[in-house]
Image 1: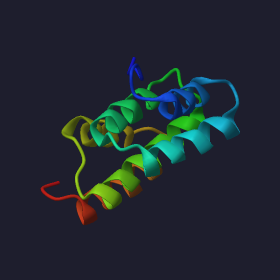
Image 2: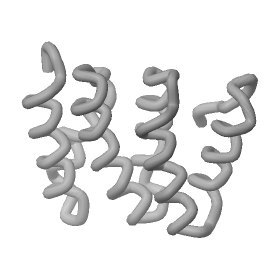
Image 3: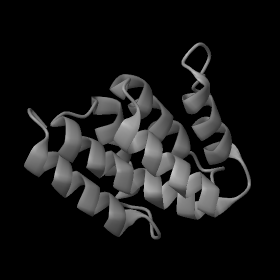
Image 4: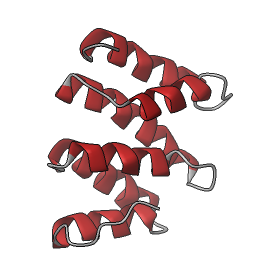
Length: 112
């Protein structure tokens, strides 16, 4: 599990909301982290956590989309996240979203 220790109250609050039971709060918080979290490496690790099988389906779907946003915003994305997106292409629920995110990776991320 990705920790949020020592990274300020805002991140801790967002992580708590993402991990909480309210889907609307979780998705709002995940988008906020995607757009505003300064530690982009930490964000990518957290997105990987959000893609776990025990995570709410809507939160997982948004985490896939957010991975594409990371590629667009940062022009780079880590190999672990790309590999996970490739795995998710075979997923019946998330496959199409993963394809879209990977298209963003190819279009916007350097060296992808």
